[in-house]
Amino acid sequence: MGEATVQPDEALPRELASLVEPLAVEIHLAWMQAKLAQGWRSGPLDREAMTHPDLVPYDQLPESSRILDRTTVAAALAGLDRLGYRVVRKPGLAVGS
Image (cartoon, rainbow, N blue to C red; front, side):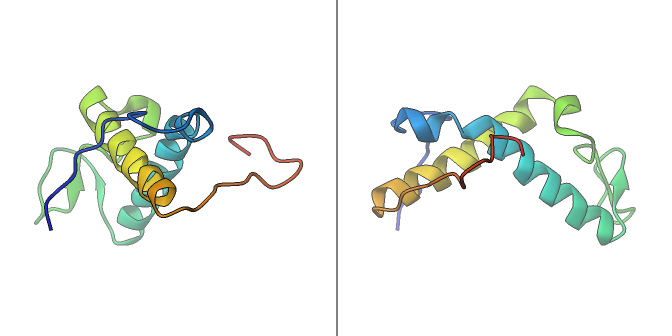
């Protein structure tokens, strides 16, 4: 199976494209919490020392890392769309809640 490259917001319906950034923040937070729980900490990338430069809040990430998170989210949302799924917000919840 070939690799598909999806750019953030590429070919996504508007209602899904609007979720890319807030979901990228959530995905980064989940990744960061998992890494921290495993004993990793912020610092230059060193697998033996268990340090990673992206173990910082999303708004402190370099743009290259934010693009990776956005691209991952956009690909997942595009996949759900292609498979015929809909994303529906729970009543009373706003994006970011």
